[in-house]
Length: 262
Image 1: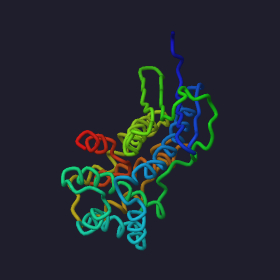
Image 2: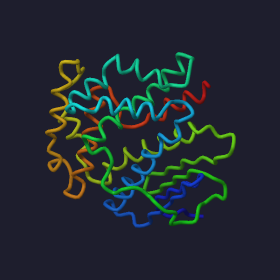
Image 3: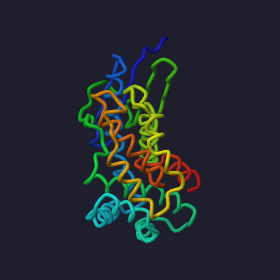
């Protein structure tokens, strides 16, 4: 049976029941839908990390870092002292496993610390209701996409034995796929944005304010169609943080390695 082009996401777990399917595959509609899905999954990840780290403690730490200017916050996020404080919130004694979780915790810290100062989520909002029939009776997370050469299937059936960190891993993996595709469908000049930050190779502590200032001055309207200017600004923020050595997104690979070795 031929599968029609579509993008679909459903999440049925406890009180979280959301889902929607897109069949109209014009680029702009796809970009907006993917942005809404990205918001939906990335915002939900922390709820599934509470077994492996003190999420509330990390959120409070982020608030403590968030009083100054953006550049001041970034300097603190890169500080070894902050990493040591962050380590206290990880529920793991094994050093190698703790390091993997620290990567995830750092992403949470970055998102929480910057969210009060910068736009880190797309303007489309999140899924709030279940608008399609779920493909499985069991509790699950399911994402499928087919459009041209893009075919993606990511799913997890959730039962009593499923580690909650595994749900976080899947949501993070889905988000990674979405953030790669959003610029493509939104017509964002990815190469141009890479070039915008090309002067910064290995960023030292003294250079952090310069990189942040460059990001804050980013002329997003020059790199994307009008309806996707904010999406381009978020993409630029993501690239800026990567240059610095920080991540705006939860690293699925770190969670995957943690679960494999645990």
